[in-house]
Image 1 (cartoon, rainbow, N blue to C red):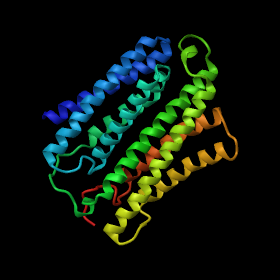
Image 2 (cartoon, one colour):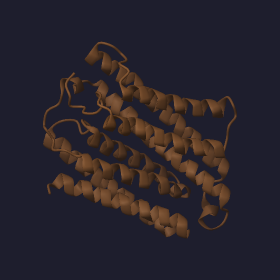
Image 3 (tube, rainbow, N blue to C red):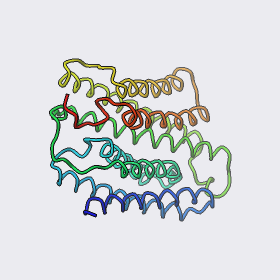
Length: 274
């Protein structure tokens, strides 16, 4: 096993241990497990970053040229955002009970799809718009994943009042955080769509091709736009939007990585020349 894969599977292991720490921290109401989960998630991120760096150096191409690399890089950005949130407030540790299991499942799946680096990059990828596209997609994913985590914590806070739940932020604060992270994700998804359209125009000569992933990404963006509409215009708050954010992130994950896995299209194999 080469150095890249050692660091990659080390990251998977730490993410998995972190996920269990957060989950059992909630079940057993032991805050020390949250602290353990935080340390393990940081170690997992270190392994994740190192594995991506090795792959980039070895192949000499961008580390998100196929589905496995896209997932790995997306998880990396999402965990980085999660850790920034954790550093900002100890009272938000419990969101790891949703964030880390999702990260663990995704990066573990990426490991089963990983291929050897070819060292070549298709002409269709040789565009600066790719950077805006990937940064928008990955940052947006991290934001809405954290939003889903705050949604879960909101629902738990409403139901339980004792133990570690007393230390969680009040429901109104969690509701506002959920809204802010969804708003951030919505903006970044907009950047993803705009840069993707400009990139597509460079490659295909037209801004929109009705590629299945393009279409589902638009649907995903509209779903989060509806979240903002329901909150700002219709006055929705609390439990309904908490559930909404948790379901919406599943739709987002499916649109990003599920669709290109089962439907042959431009996003299925990013190295394909067009």
